[in-house]
Amino acid sequence: MKPWTEFEEAIKPHLRHVRTYCYYLTASKWESEDLLQEALLRAFKHYRDTGILRHPRSLLYKIARNVHIDAHRRRRGITVPIDEALQLPYYDNNYAAIRGTLEWVTEHLSAREMEMLLLAEVFDYSYQDIADELQCTVPAVKMVLHRSKSTLRKRGAQQEPTAAPRSRAGKRRSAPALPYMIDRWTTALMTGEL
Image: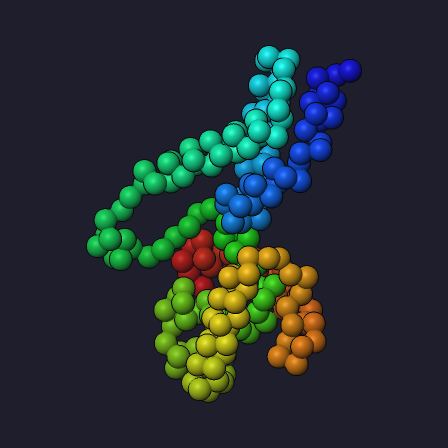
């Protein structure tokens, strides 16, 4: 039997538990999948080097925990004084993180709600500027922003992926934003320009 096949047979019964543990550590679907892949890769390297794989679930738990701690330590080492951070515009050049966040938001908000929220929270548009840009009234902007933030808080607290969000009437909404809109907003967030 090939090493990969033996390794796969040994870990297959434990994958569901390890995937759940990775999600517990990261609280993010995408980060947990990355963590799981890294843990599997390191476990395979260990198996390839030693030829031994005792207690695969415990080994994978330990590797995942250590990888997660190492990643946290690397991120923690990057500090910026608060005064300096407040002076600089926020730019995140991590495309996958920005795109993933926008996709998550579009699962829960309509395209118009997402646009208003991004204009207000990311690009610091005033209520009047948003109303002028989207040809609506200031009270409508306030209402939509309040409802959008409330929806995202509820969904974020649940931390569970949903198939499709429900409208106020309880009916399922279709995917609200088209892929080109997500691309447009991802580019805007990465460059800091609309």
